[in-house]
Length: 255
Image 1 (cartoon, rainbow, N blue to C red):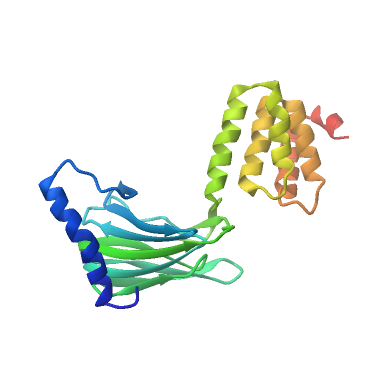
Image 2 (image 1 turned 120 degrees about the horizontal axis):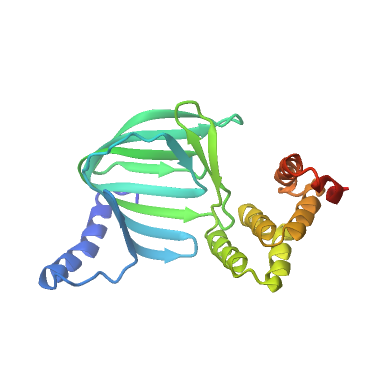
């Protein structure tokens, strides 16, 4: 990752046999995990634990609009540009007030790009020539929530869980709620009470229980609001206040 001569040779040794194979069999598929998007594609070469080695390519294209936000994630990243060139913006988050600095960047073959978790981010804005990047990432075992900030004023606009397991939990909770079975109430309630679970997934459990059984959901909301040491205490108290304002009869239930 740090050698301008070694990295291209490593990539060539991997890519060239597959190029030859695909020329011989145009309908063939590379047996590696991969994904594509608008102007971007990635092939995962190796993975062990939270460490992943990938090949990424950015293609020239016309962007309809400039980014309005920037996201910082709990993932360490080391990259080296194998070929091509692009222009973009680099960002660094600093200070307790979540202020960040930004500067223009030009990337070309041999350049290294390093990003520290929850501190650095970047946007690739204009690709002059298809840019191929060898990327090494390491995700935290218990990743902090990703934070997305508005570029024009630095305001925090969104926090999302950085834990992939939380996505699975979201789907499971949604399924339990959609089933509407009375037997689902206890597992949903217990999940929301468990402080070790992902915060956002726990809040989804509260939402599902409120939709499934409003009385049980409001009782859970009361309980969480009174647990001052819990990360859900403040949002639970805020939602409780909003619900009581909209439905004054709930005040008696709270009492």
